[in-house]
Structure formats: structure tokens, C-alpha cells
Length: 231
Image (cartoon, rainbow, N blue to C red; front, side, top):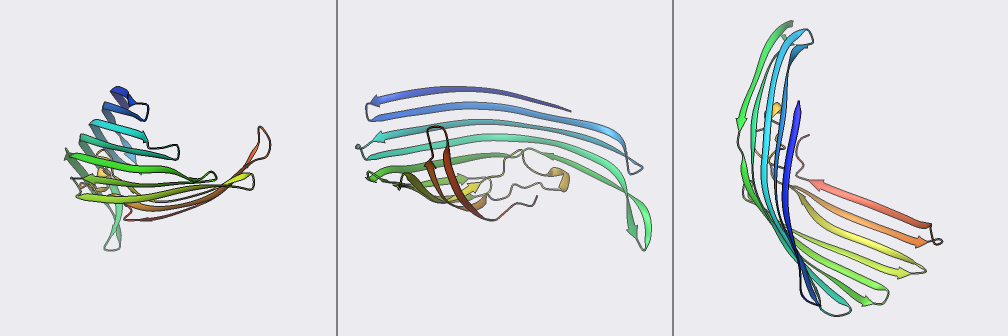
């Protein structure tokens, strides 16, 4: 087996004025996987050839604007264009029960795929100092993928409240997790990309310094997921 990867990227950082700063990154990646094998499994011969590849280009930009001493705005966008290649062949025999008898059954999986797809994401967020002890960070993210016709809007909220010598933190948000072009389970017969997984996160925690080198942190986390892909 073998695995190869090559990457290239260009980064541009800008400060249009003392209040507005940003960063733009353009990157490309090329990955290949290769597995071959032959032998015996459970006393029956098998042969495997698994060749895969992924080419992807990504452009990302993020900007931050200091509206005042109390409010900072952030926004950004990301776009990707990629393609994958699958060349998977597996031949094997195994024992099955048919008509009450154990018999040998031959199985062949022969899959050749070339999925392609583009994705787009954008977000906007604000960090506001409502009082000297209370910070609120609302945000909104949009994600789209043409291959699976996904269009997801994900609101998010973070707060921090300094109280009693410590900080109480809480966070809530919706998130999307797309299936990568290279993540098809072709060995199990999967040939179509599935829609993005969805999840709701809830976090609450408290942290307090005990001395100059030790701090106490307690946190509770809950995640509710749906539209999960088979594993």
C-alpha cells in the first residue's frame, strides 16, 4: 500500500486601515491512495485492487472590522472545487448457508467512479462587549453543496460572563458536516454522496484561576445529531 500527497498554498494578509484587517488563502491539494493484495481469507482465495485519488482547490477569505472599542465584526467566505477517483476491485469467496447447507459463494465488487463537486460557505459574526463583565458573540453561517443539493443555515451564539473571580461560558450552535468526495464506502456498495450530517451543540462551563499556574475548569457538553451517514 502507498499514500502520497502534495499541497500548495498562497496567503495574502492585508490591513486596509487600522480598523479593517483580512486574510485570503488559495490552496490546492492532490492525494492518492493505493492498496493491492492477494491471499487467502477463511480458507478461500481473494484479490484486491484499490486505487483512489482526490484533487481539490480551495479559496478562503476572512475579514475583521473594529466598529468600536466594544464591537468587532467578522465575515468570510470559502469556496472549493474538487474531483475524486475510485478504482476498486475485490474478488473473493466465502461460506454462506443456502437451503440449510454451507456452500461456497463467489463475490466480485468492481467499482469505478469519478465524482466531482463544488462547495460554498460564508459566515458573519459579531463580538460585543455589552458590559465590562459580559461578552456576547452571535453568528450565522451558510453552507451549500451542489452535488447533494445541500443548503444549510447555521446560527450560533457564544457568551462569557465574568463573575466571582471566574468566567461562566455558554455556547449553542448548529453545524453541518459534509461527506468528502473521497469518503465513499465503495467496498460496501456506496456510490452516491449523502447529504450533510447535522448537529446541534450545547456547551456550558466555568473556569477560575486558582493561582498563577493552576486553573479550575468545569464543562458540560451535549450534541444532538441527525441525518447521520451509515458507518
